[in-house]
Image (cartoon, rainbow, N blue to C red):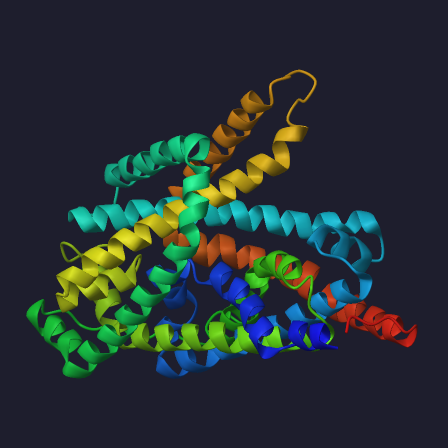
Length: 404
C-alpha cells in the first residue's frame, strides 16, 4: 500500500515531469528562438495563452500514451507504438518522426552554438562566418563524440539546472528593462521603426498562428514521449496523470513567461534586423542573447552565453551518441567487423548530415523543419493516440488490467 502511494505521489509525479521539462527546455528554448518563432511574434496575448494550450494538448496525448504503456507493462516507445497501431510494422511511422526531429535538433544545436559563438565574439553570423563557426562546432563535436561522451553526460544534469536558472534571470531582466523603456530608447537611437507583430490568421487555417503555434508545436514536442515512457515505468495511472498535470504547468508556464518577455522586445529586435543595423543582422536568431546585449548586463550575458553554448554542444553530443548506439549495429556489420570503426562511421555521417542542415540557420530549422515534422506528428502520432489509444485503454481496463 505504501509503495503504491509513493509511486502515485505528487513528489514522484514532479520527478517524472522534470524529465519532460528537461527534454523540452534545452538550448532551442533557452535561446528564445523557437519561442519567438511560434509565440512571441504574434503579440503578448498569444505569447501568454498559446503555450499553455499547446502544452495542454501535449499533456493529454502524453497521458494517453503513458497510461497505455503502463497497462501493457511496456517501458519503451517501440513496444508501446507497436501495440498502439493496428499493425506492428506501423511503428516505423513514429520512428520516421523521431529520427527527423533528432537530426533537426542536432542541426539546430550546431547552428545555435555557432550563432552564440559569433554573437559573443561580436561577429555577424552571416555568409562565410556562418560556415566557419559551424565547422568549429563540428570539430568540437567530433572530439567530444569520440572521447568526451561520459564527461558530457555527467555534466548534463548540472548544466540543465544552470541553464534553467540563467534563462529565468534573462526573462526577469528582460521584463524589467522593457518596462523601463530600453526598447523604445533604442528604436529612437537608431531611427528605426518597430516591426509590427505577425498576423495571426494570414495564409489560411493551416498556416494561421493558432494552428501552427498550438497544434504544430505540440506535435513536434511529442519527441518528449519516449523518455517519459521510460521515466514513468514504476508509476501507476494516478501517478502518470499527476506527472502530466505538473509537466503541463511547468512547461506551459515557462514558455508563457519567456514568450511574454520576448513579445515586448520583438518589435525592436525584428525592426533592427529588418533595417540591417550592424550588430543586429541576426537579432531574432538568439533573441535572449540579443536582449542581454541591449540591456548591457555583461556578467549575465557572459554567463548565459557560455551556458547556452555548452547546452547546444551537449545536445549535439548526446543525440549523436544516441544515433550511434542505435545504428552502428546495422551499419554493414558483416563488412566492417570492428564496432569502434562502425561507431565512427555512423558519427561522421550523422555529423555531416546535420552540418549540412545547420547551414539553413537556426530560425529556418526551428520554424520549417520542426514545423513540417510537427504536421507529420499530428497525423501519425497525435491522431493515433486518440483514434486507437483511447479505445484500447478502455478495453484493457474492461478486462481488469490495472497499472495502480
